[in-house]
Length: 87
Image 1 (cartoon, rainbow, N blue to C red):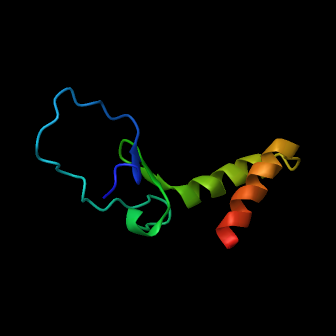
Image 2: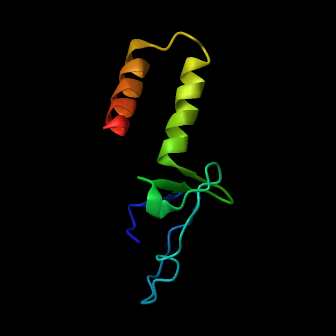
C-alpha cells in the first residue's frame, strides 16, 4: 500500500527505520462506512478510529450546512469537491 494512501494521526515518528515494512500492506477500514482503504481516495487513521476522505467530506458538509448559511468560500469548496466526485 502506498504511504500516501493512509495518513496516520497521532503516530510517533520512528527514530530508526527497520528493513521490515510491517503494516504497509494492511487493509484499513473506515469506522463510519466500513469501506477499505483500497476502495477510497484517502484514509485518515487515528488512535482507534479511521475515516475515509468521502466520510470526512460528508461530515464537513454537515457541519457547514448545519448553520444553514455557508460562506461563499465554504460553498466553493463543497461545489468543487462534489462536482469532481460526480464525474
